[in-house]
Image (cartoon, rainbow, N blue to C red; front, side, top):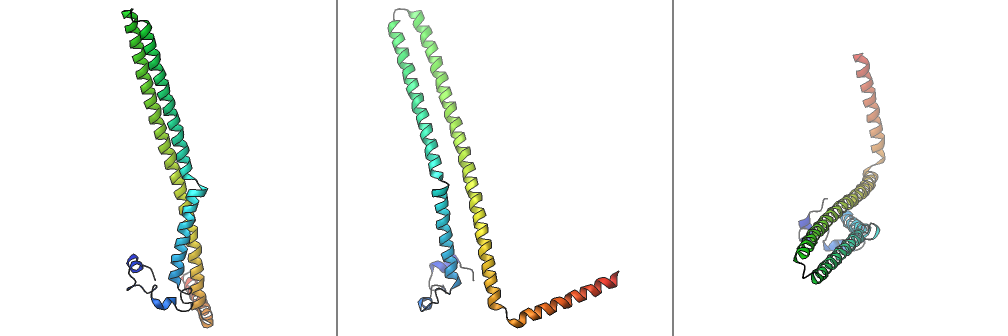
Amino acid sequence: MILEPIALLNPIHSTWLSPSLFEGSSLLNNPEFWKVTNLLVFAVFLIYILRKKIGIGKVFDRRGEAITKELEEAKREKHEAQQKLEEVLGRLKRLDQEIAEIRSEAEIEARKEDERIKAAAESDAERIQQTARREIEAAMKVARSELRAFVARHSVEMAEGLITREMRPGDSSRMLSDYAKDLAASGKAGGGSK
Protein backbone atom coordinates (compact mmCIF):
# COMPACT_ATOMS: atom_id res chain seq x y z
CA MET A 1 0.00 0.00 0.00
CA ILE A 2 1.47 3.34 -1.02
CA LEU A 3 0.96 6.11 1.53
CA GLU A 4 -0.55 9.28 0.17
CA PRO A 5 0.19 12.62 1.87
CA ILE A 6 -3.53 13.24 2.47
CA ALA A 7 -3.83 9.93 4.29
CA LEU A 8 -0.97 10.88 6.59
CA LEU A 9 -2.66 14.11 7.58
CA ASN A 10 -6.25 12.83 7.86
CA PRO A 11 -6.60 9.98 10.38
CA ILE A 12 -10.23 9.39 9.34
CA HIS A 13 -9.18 8.07 5.93
CA SER A 14 -5.95 6.53 7.09
CA THR A 15 -5.83 2.82 7.88
CA TRP A 16 -2.35 2.81 9.32
CA LEU A 17 -3.22 5.31 12.08
CA SER A 18 -6.37 3.50 13.20
CA PRO A 19 -6.69 2.80 16.94
CA SER A 20 -6.64 -0.95 16.31
CA LEU A 21 -2.97 -0.68 15.37
CA PHE A 22 -2.03 0.38 18.85
CA GLU A 23 -3.54 -2.73 20.44
CA GLY A 24 -1.04 -5.48 21.16
CA SER A 25 1.93 -5.71 18.80
CA SER A 26 0.12 -4.93 15.52
CA LEU A 27 1.99 -1.61 15.19
CA LEU A 28 5.29 -3.48 14.98
CA ASN A 29 3.85 -5.78 12.31
CA ASN A 30 2.57 -2.90 10.19
CA PRO A 31 4.80 -2.42 7.11
CA GLU A 32 3.71 1.21 6.68
CA PHE A 33 4.94 2.00 10.18
CA TRP A 34 8.37 0.63 9.25
CA LYS A 35 8.37 2.55 5.96
CA VAL A 36 7.75 5.79 7.82
CA THR A 37 10.33 4.84 10.45
CA ASN A 38 12.90 4.03 7.74
CA LEU A 39 12.20 7.33 6.01
CA LEU A 40 12.70 9.26 9.25
CA VAL A 41 15.93 7.40 10.02
CA PHE A 42 17.21 8.10 6.50
CA ALA A 43 16.32 11.81 6.73
CA VAL A 44 18.14 12.14 10.07
CA PHE A 45 21.15 10.26 8.65
CA LEU A 46 21.24 12.50 5.53
CA ILE A 47 21.10 15.67 7.63
CA TYR A 48 23.86 14.32 9.89
CA ILE A 49 26.10 13.50 6.89
CA LEU A 50 25.61 16.93 5.29
CA ARG A 51 26.20 18.90 8.48
CA LYS A 52 28.74 16.85 10.45
CA LYS A 53 30.74 14.77 7.96
CA ILE A 54 30.81 17.01 4.91
CA GLY A 55 30.77 20.23 6.96
CA ILE A 56 29.30 22.27 4.18
CA GLY A 57 28.55 25.18 6.50
CA LYS A 58 32.16 25.43 7.67
CA VAL A 59 33.44 25.70 4.12
CA PHE A 60 31.19 28.67 3.44
CA ASP A 61 32.08 30.25 6.79
CA ARG A 62 35.84 29.99 6.15
CA ARG A 63 35.57 31.41 2.66
CA GLY A 64 33.35 34.25 3.88
CA GLU A 65 35.87 35.12 6.58
CA ALA A 66 38.70 35.16 4.03
CA ILE A 67 36.77 37.53 1.76
CA THR A 68 35.91 39.78 4.69
CA LYS A 69 39.59 39.96 5.66
CA GLU A 70 40.61 40.79 2.10
CA LEU A 71 37.99 43.53 1.89
CA GLU A 72 39.09 44.99 5.23
CA GLU A 73 42.71 44.95 4.06
CA ALA A 74 41.73 46.70 0.83
CA LYS A 75 39.79 49.34 2.78
CA ARG A 76 42.77 49.88 5.04
CA GLU A 77 45.10 50.24 2.06
CA LYS A 78 42.71 52.67 0.41
CA HIS A 79 42.47 54.68 3.62
CA GLU A 80 46.28 54.81 3.89
CA ALA A 81 46.55 55.93 0.26
CA GLN A 82 44.04 58.70 0.89
CA GLN A 83 45.95 59.84 4.01
CA LYS A 84 49.18 59.89 2.07
CA LEU A 85 47.58 62.01 -0.65
CA GLU A 86 46.31 64.53 1.88
CA GLU A 87 49.74 64.74 3.52
CA VAL A 88 51.45 65.43 0.22
CA LEU A 89 48.82 68.04 -0.68
CA GLY A 90 49.34 69.79 2.66
CA ARG A 91 53.10 70.06 2.12
CA LEU A 92 52.81 71.24 -1.45
CA LYS A 93 49.97 73.78 -1.10
CA ARG A 94 52.09 76.54 -2.58
CA LEU A 95 53.02 74.66 -5.68
CA ASP A 96 49.82 74.54 -7.76
CA GLN A 97 51.34 72.63 -10.62
CA GLU A 98 52.83 69.89 -8.44
CA ILE A 99 49.59 69.64 -6.51
CA ALA A 100 47.64 69.12 -9.73
CA GLU A 101 50.10 66.38 -10.82
CA ILE A 102 50.05 64.61 -7.46
CA ARG A 103 46.25 64.82 -7.31
CA SER A 104 45.82 63.33 -10.77
CA GLU A 105 48.25 60.51 -9.96
CA ALA A 106 46.46 59.77 -6.71
CA GLU A 107 43.05 59.72 -8.43
CA ILE A 108 44.37 57.37 -11.08
CA GLU A 109 45.82 55.11 -8.39
CA ALA A 110 42.59 55.24 -6.41
CA ARG A 111 40.55 54.32 -9.50
CA LYS A 112 42.95 51.50 -10.30
CA GLU A 113 42.77 50.29 -6.71
CA ASP A 114 38.98 50.47 -6.75
CA GLU A 115 38.91 48.55 -10.02
CA ARG A 116 41.36 45.99 -8.68
CA ILE A 117 39.34 45.56 -5.48
CA LYS A 118 36.09 45.24 -7.43
CA ALA A 119 37.67 42.77 -9.86
CA ALA A 120 39.14 40.74 -6.99
CA ALA A 121 35.83 40.73 -5.12
CA GLU A 122 33.92 39.68 -8.23
CA SER A 123 36.48 36.99 -8.99
CA ASP A 124 36.34 35.71 -5.40
CA ALA A 125 32.55 35.74 -5.45
CA GLU A 126 32.51 33.75 -8.69
CA ARG A 127 35.02 31.25 -7.31
CA ILE A 128 32.97 30.86 -4.15
CA GLN A 129 29.83 30.25 -6.18
CA GLN A 130 31.58 27.70 -8.36
CA THR A 131 33.07 25.96 -5.34
CA ALA A 132 29.69 25.93 -3.62
CA ARG A 133 28.02 24.52 -6.74
CA ARG A 134 30.64 21.79 -7.02
CA GLU A 135 30.36 20.91 -3.35
CA ILE A 136 26.57 20.87 -3.47
CA GLU A 137 26.63 18.72 -6.61
CA ALA A 138 29.09 16.33 -4.98
CA ALA A 139 26.97 16.16 -1.83
CA MET A 140 23.87 15.55 -3.93
CA LYS A 141 25.63 12.75 -5.87
CA VAL A 142 26.69 11.11 -2.62
CA ALA A 143 23.20 11.48 -1.17
CA ARG A 144 21.59 10.07 -4.33
CA SER A 145 24.00 7.15 -4.36
CA GLU A 146 23.30 6.39 -0.72
CA LEU A 147 19.57 6.73 -1.32
CA ARG A 148 19.72 4.34 -4.30
CA ALA A 149 21.67 1.79 -2.27
CA PHE A 150 19.27 2.17 0.63
CA VAL A 151 16.20 1.78 -1.58
CA ALA A 152 17.70 -1.18 -3.46
CA ARG A 153 18.69 -2.96 -0.26
CA HIS A 154 15.29 -2.48 1.35
CA SER A 155 13.43 -3.36 -1.86
CA VAL A 156 15.28 -6.67 -2.06
CA GLU A 157 14.62 -7.35 1.62
CA MET A 158 10.92 -6.58 1.20
CA ALA A 159 10.70 -8.74 -1.95
CA GLU A 160 12.42 -11.64 -0.18
CA GLY A 161 10.06 -11.30 2.74
CA LEU A 162 7.03 -11.20 0.45
CA ILE A 163 8.18 -14.25 -1.53
CA THR A 164 8.91 -16.30 1.61
CA ARG A 165 5.53 -15.36 3.09
CA GLU A 166 3.51 -16.06 -0.04
CA MET A 167 5.34 -19.13 -1.41
CA ARG A 168 3.94 -22.55 -0.53
CA PRO A 169 5.80 -25.85 -0.86
CA GLY A 170 3.67 -26.85 -3.86
CA ASP A 171 4.39 -23.57 -5.64
CA SER A 172 8.10 -24.21 -6.03
CA SER A 173 7.59 -27.72 -7.48
CA ARG A 174 4.85 -26.43 -9.82
CA MET A 175 7.11 -23.59 -11.01
CA LEU A 176 9.96 -26.03 -11.61
CA SER A 177 7.78 -28.39 -13.67
CA ASP A 178 6.34 -25.45 -15.67
CA TYR A 179 9.88 -24.26 -16.39
CA ALA A 180 10.93 -27.75 -17.50
CA LYS A 181 7.89 -27.96 -19.83
CA ASP A 182 8.72 -24.54 -21.29
CA LEU A 183 12.31 -25.62 -21.90
CA ALA A 184 11.17 -28.82 -23.57
CA ALA A 185 8.69 -26.93 -25.74
CA SER A 186 11.28 -24.36 -26.79
CA GLY A 187 13.75 -27.14 -27.57
CA LYS A 188 11.19 -28.86 -29.83
CA ALA A 189 10.27 -25.59 -31.52
CA GLY A 190 13.92 -24.64 -32.01
CA GLY A 191 14.86 -28.10 -33.28
CA GLY A 192 11.99 -28.21 -35.81
CA SER A 193 12.88 -24.87 -37.41
CA LYS A 194 16.47 -25.92 -38.22
